[in-house]
Image 1 (cartoon, one colour):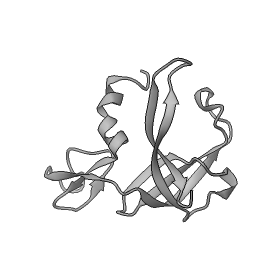
Image 2 (tube, rainbow, N blue to C red):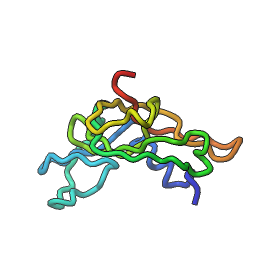
Image 3 (cartoon, helix red, strand yellow):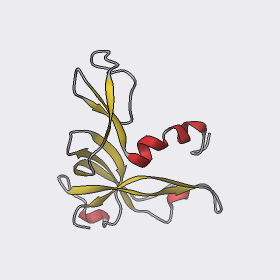
Image 4 (cartoon, helix red, strand yellow):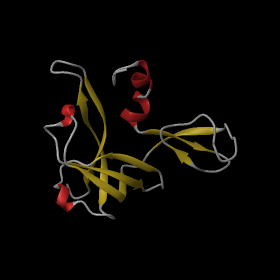
Length: 133
């Protein structure tokens, strides 16, 4: 299955618009969205847009990238806690891997994630950039 399967296009709203769901009883926010709150079985929820500012909780550096990202390496992958407490994992960009630190403030930006083949379809999603950038 390629990145451009039917599952991929169903996920466009959450990846392109950073849509999540917030459940009424627990007040918890989930990204990607869930239909049922796993803590209490609640199904009543509302769509919310995630904030675009957060802090790095942990990270790793990928020094030998897979073939499709070979021109990008080395690059950082971080788990970021957004201002509302939601946690996301994504690629760090526009920063030297030696400058990435736990606690660093970052912004979520909409960027190209990958391209399928040399003349393939472009796939977009979110990446993290330092807040000062």
